[in-house]
Amino acid sequence: MHIDSSHPRAISLKIRERLVWGVKNGLTSVAGLIAHGRGEAFDYLLGEKINEFAKNSIIVAAAYLTLAKHPILSVNGNTAALAAREFIKLAKVLDTKIEVNLFHYSLERVRKIEKYLKKLDTDSVLESSRNPRINIPQVASARKIVLQEGIGNADVVFIPLEDGDRAQALVAQGKKIITVDLNPLSRTAQTATVTIVDNIVRTMPMLIEKVNKLKNAPKNRLEKIISEFNNTENINLALHYIRNRLSR
Ligand code: PTJ
Image (cartoon, rainbow, N blue to C red):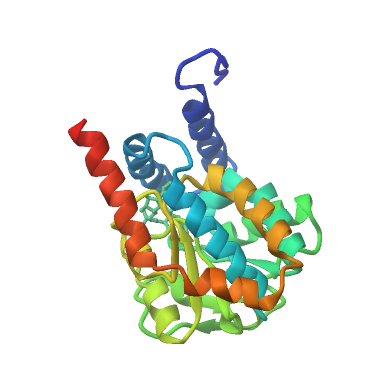
């Protein structure tokens, strides 16, 4: 569908079209459209912009990713459609890999997403066909199927757009979890080490910029950024923001 840029909701409509494209091309699940609708509702309440609490957490996420020994970026059907190029850019700056990990699991869709990412860049993707798979204990969904060399070995895991039990299980394994979720109340938002309450489309460019900035920073500066951050307090800022917007 052609969307005129002068339409008052052009950006939002273009993002929707991107997901429709993802579904048509077998990257995004049909349920991904529903998940996006939930995200849109929260985005409306957040004013559809990057707020201060999101900026704070993006800097902290950049510090964690920069300090990590084995960071990994987890992509699902929604993030593949909305931010594949940015995931590849981030993988490059961090010198790390992307792993496809799905909730509505099918090997066919995993392969399609991997193929799509590989077309954009040949070596940023950890291929499921070449890497041993393991199961994360205590995860009820197919999200438990991960690659040993990816999420299995990672110390910092970037898992945007999920409301599930995987974050909790990974935190229990001692990993640091970074998520992006427009819903500050989702289970993943509530259990992650760093929760970026923002739209993935807005977050990714800023996250790449911040990682680039912090890449050569001294270790103690990165540790200071991390130690001064409290995820619960930051999520509360997002909730207060929504409440104030509603009462106004
Ligand atoms: O491709 P699959 O099979 O792995 O499935 C992907 C989805 C997203 C469908 C799957 O992970 C899922 O069902 O997710 P949930 O449990 O609906 O959680 C998705 C979360 O992401 C919700 O809390 C939404 O509010 C949030 N969300 C949706 N769109 C965006 C978003 N957060 C940030 N940016 C968005 N564009």
